[in-house]
Length: 254
Image 1 (cartoon, helix red, strand yellow):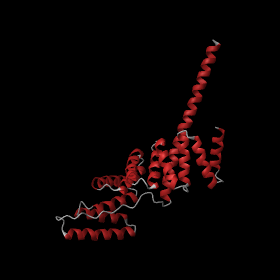
Image 2: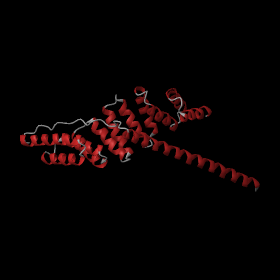
Image 3: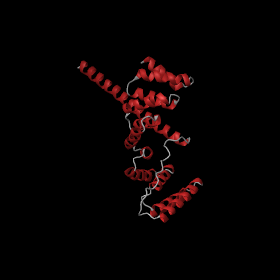
Image 4: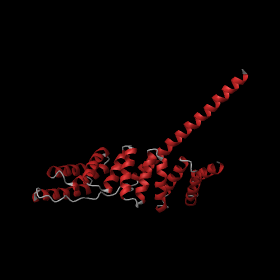
């Protein structure tokens, strides 16, 4: 009877320890993902350029469109540019919508309207507009901006797909790899994020935030040796960073 009680007590104790470790790990993962989202937001607040300027497409020549309509649209675009320079977003939107009523297929107008929605925190409208634009033009910046619209709405899986399309078309750009890697982390896809962040870090080696994300991502996938190497790189640049020192000590004990 005593042996049974000892066995049951040991079994319950082991289960409790495993449960606590699992809960702590899940909590750590949630904190890590949340920190990535906060860092992404802080970049925007500091004015960092997290999406490219949309490449403006000139309206295609169409014999059915009169020269008068084209002139009207160009005039409205100039008015929209002046209003945007003055920060009058509502007026810019009104002018661009007026231009689209004159020439519904004007890609240049749609691109400016989509960018307005994105920069004025109307992500759902930006999402719809970029989807429409991509049906007409396979433009790398449209894919990237659609990814940003998804990301801000916390549609992280969709953001990964959109950023992936931009990365396919501009794979030599380290910023594409970096942004896609961050989106993968936010979606919880750490193994997919690692090679992307590694590639970005090869060129953006002075980006400490990127190195922090890469090191933390290594820990998530169990690459402790690579994490230690990355933290040592960070430590050389940030010798007074106590969090990095604690990470190195923890890895040394492991």
